[in-house]
Image (cartoon, rainbow, N blue to C red; front, side):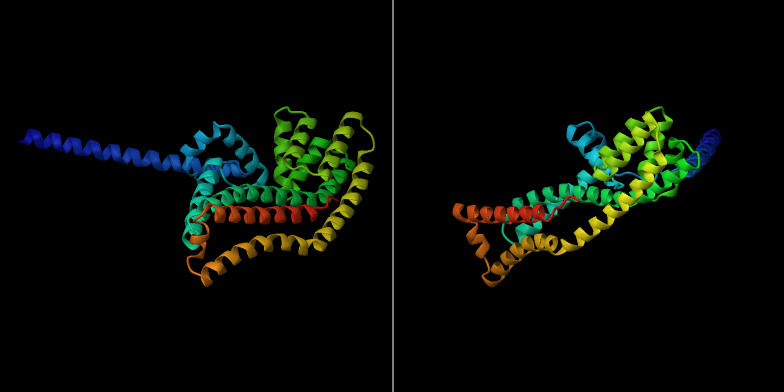
Length: 312
């Protein structure tokens, strides 16, 4: 009996020792990870370490497909802190919610239609975020050209001037220039690094700036004078774009009001005559009429947006 008690006591002590060792290893690992994040964050944001990523399994499988790779590239241009898996799962959840809401408020026929609109809306949201980030970057281009001109006039090399601008400017210009400096640090050429930035944020102003920097690095010349002239030009284009956007704000709002009026009219009809949408979409003729009407709303929206889009 005493032998069994000694074995039990020894096993208990061994278990306690293992638990203490495991807790110590866990806490020390978390402390080392936190110290690593702090040390890496001191030099810039590190993707994947800022927060715990969700849906890692979906993200891993999605990255292996062509759709996942395209989605990853588009998310990188938007500046959103999302992985392809997170965005894909969120998109599916939103589409399912739109399907249920449309089927419950309108009719069962409008569920798939709302799902298709939700898929289009997700892609439009990414395009809007990309355009918004590009517009913000364009507004920072005059300050970027001014910093590069001052740095090169002070005798700094162009690569050093780009690194200085990355530290001085806020996002998105600071983030994009940081990527350029990182690529230059690993041995990429200035043409490739700046060209990749121009592909991520396509705009005429950025193409002009990149072309000026590349030609100056290749053939030399008065880069300071070119950058100062470019700064004045970019400032003028910035003011012109702002005036054009202000003048077209009413037209842009009209493009978004028209689809809202269409959906509101459907809700009003169903409110005045309960069950009218179910009876209307219960036949092929009614479904075809609804699809034609929705198509006309989409065409009207696209035409108004196209007419209000003026390249400056």
